[in-house]
Length: 574
Image (cartoon, rainbow, N blue to C red; front, side):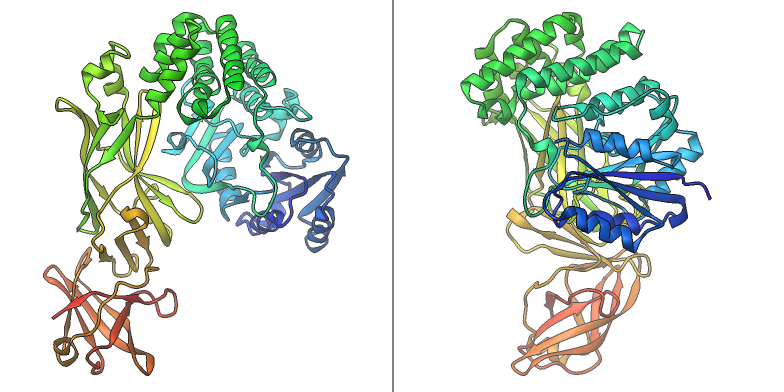
């Protein structure tokens, strides 16, 4: 059978990180005979080569190891991997990262269904910024002219092998910046069709564990970095005859790679000399390659930066960076309520500038076109998995209102059964955050629920064991899917111990449900498990232990399948 996918992994002194990477690759749901793994060792010196050979020996039909002299950067080993690939498609994976178990199958399916030259799989990262808007919805047969592909330029994608070979699309070799962006832009420019798999996590871009740095952590040298940015602009020019499209694509690099390095904490933390060098390189490149007319298409706050840049006003740019650093979204107290299996959040948040309410009048001193900021604002509730940083949008129902001062308002219904692109959230702990994109500036904040204990359960019968809204770190709203919470803290009272049924507070259900539950009773003699029946209706939740419970005991309740989750100490009342 022909090989469908070659997974190319550049490896250098990976330490223990390579084990999780390889476990994820050999554990794919795609049949083993349909893919191969090519590990290109870039002259490792820490024993990694022996680890790779051991994996090759265990999986000789699946894994090939190629050893190369050290080149100092991932570009050459990736090129070597492409040259050796037998698959119709190549998937690049870094040696620190992991793939979801069904990633290759899902991405290959998308490629086949739409005859795609490039496939983007939903990306998550525990240390790098990800433009999650790219992965908001599945997409098929798009190009860089009609989809924001330029917002995703890491190489962790699936590429048609013949596309790379026919057009000689290769990575720059040796230590350099943005070689992955040059590569991706060449691929996008030649691609007739691109697909995006957004309805499931595919790629986990992880911080290196244990020691060392990720390649992207290297501090940029301004002269070299902006030489590489100019190379990306050259790629756009080579592929794009349409002037309007060329300007729109180039605008992303003006906004992110150029002006993005001159704002917020990044700008403020530079030394004076480094700040001056970055400003000079950005100003020079903008003057030579980006006509002033493109500035009008920039977002509200970024447009102000562009004007300061064109004027050569480094002092003004620094002052504006200090002001931008004060832009904040402050959420009022949120008290979530379960309604028909959905967690209803009534959001009210203020926008602040220099610790004062942000008004139209203040914005007008920055740029008169204040309506641009309001019309372009994108405000969402998102949930972020604590274990792997997978991020899902809950729904766009929030707006920026002008009540003399600007506020974010709206009601959001978070349904754990459908939030993951129509699928249930995976079991685990999820932070619930508000994400606001305002004038090109992103602010993500916790939703405060106060310091009073919040433990609000919703049961789903056979659909899902349970979801629990609770106050996590710094009293922010968090969600526990699958019942992993621990101590909620109370003792069994005399009246509870002697009554047939216990009324259990803060437990609701999407529909009436009766569940067999485990009740864990702690006394001075230890902890014993007592079978119980839990009945949840619209009038409340009642628990009936199968035997008497001694007054003063502490009681935990587990509603998951026996043995699948830790017990939870429930709040009860007579």
